Length: 360
Image (tube, rainbow, N blue to C red; front, top):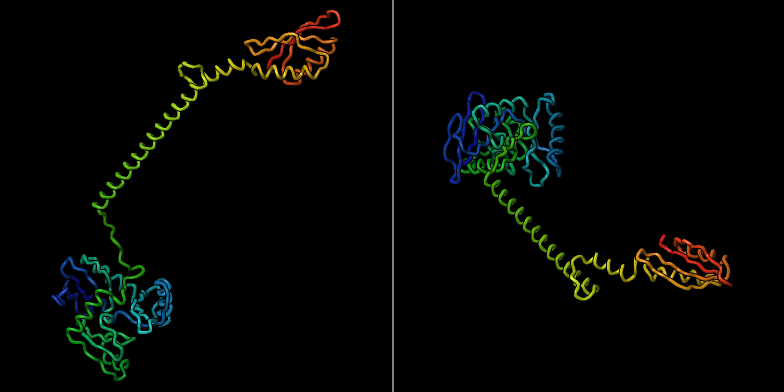
């Protein structure tokens, strides 16, 4: 249901007309019945209507341009004026209606409606309820006041003003059915709504608890699914780690003595490596480096070697003279070892002694 609520004009108070799917239903005076969609109607003599070319502009830009035009055509201070721009366009799609009304009047109307517990969805100037004729003028009585509308004009019917504006053109009165259709169409899609800018209707925020509960359930389900996915991933990682550990144990078993139980693959393989290559740098590495140093010193030969559990290599050498023993010691040190030399003794034509080679 939609109710057109006509604001007081002159000595007349609030008047209303109620429409439904079947058309006109009822009319009355005073505050309309609660529960309907209410569209308020401003008195025709309180609003000045203009039409101007405002093509392809946003609402803010169109309102700013309309305010400039309204200020130029009004004697009232700009701060006391409220300007609203409509969406109705002419056949060319350019000219749009502009309403100019006192800001004080707007505040009074809305305060009066609020006191009556009425919050209208729109506030339409009375002449804008009439259909826009392609030519000539139409007349109707709305809320006890006669209003006239032309193609680019709309105003309250006053004898002197009407004759001046119409210039003798025919003014066609609207009969009941066309008028009701025009009122229903204007109420459904207001061609110009004064509730713009500072007087725009405030949207009431309502909480849809059913929607909130559904969102909460969906959010909980998403969290549970995410948690389940994480658990599955952790289980997959654990299974993969166990498989890798089992594979490592199997590979380690191939490098250990046959029949040895695998308890700590890294430790057991390291122990076997130490047993195979020896401590320190290992037997092979240490001996190879030592013999390379010995070959670099002519006149020296090895008479005995001993590789100990500590990784030290004891070399018994014989040289042609004592100076060669010193050269050999320096060669081993140059190879990166720490060398301790025993006392070399001369036996006939040879000088013999012992060098202890250890990792630096």
